[in-house]
Length: 79
Image 1 (cartoon, rainbow, N blue to C red):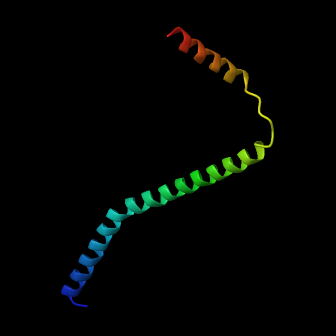
Image 2 (image 1 turned 135 degrees about the vertical axis):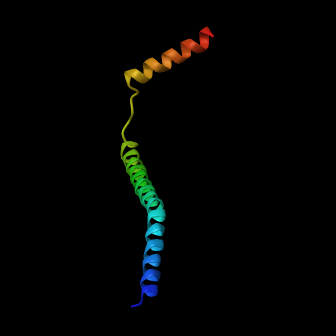
């Protein structure tokens, strides 16, 4: 291998290295976003399945809900 070929090889390796350094953060971000999207999708599906299971049960509003509704109606009357 001649000196010129060695320099060319080193230049190509340097360019490829810089390319990897520039692209790597984007690839990491894309992978991270896809993982978060998958987790959100799984959580939504889990919530839907729980909502379908709980829809058969009768629901009674909690004390906090009852209190908040009362406070809202008083604000509407007083304003």
